Length: 186
Image (cartoon, rainbow, N blue to C red; front, side, top):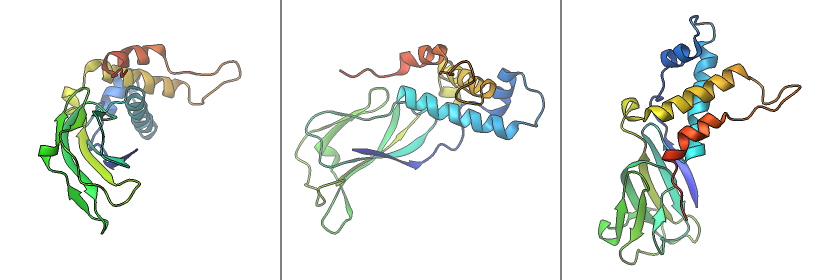
């Protein structure tokens, strides 16, 4: 199973101006640095929570059709764009929507409702393309935006991974803010 980003988000959930306000930075000398730290913080929050904050397209590649319910690895999922198996010529063939049930949003999942065509390649023969993320920056929960700001501020204040006397870690507040949005799977 592999996950591939097909289309990155067009914008970030926290703007440079919002981040500079949070940092109390009034000059523009470090705008490029702050923007880079902001993007890194967004990606770290997404990875820690298995989340997508802004709309982005992904491809989940499997070796075979799922035999039972398959939880998609990111949340929330806005749309299921394509479900396909690769045929003998290497072309994707759409799986009929009658052959699976899907639940979008939080805890997104897909479950086969009938036998899927067999993929020709033994490895990577099934593709599930989906769009994950909140509709826009206004729809991203404020707790997640705050987690991004806190983490970006920590990156700004501690520009190295370790100092002479301590190793810097992700602030516990960040994990506490992400926790309600992280899906726990048993």
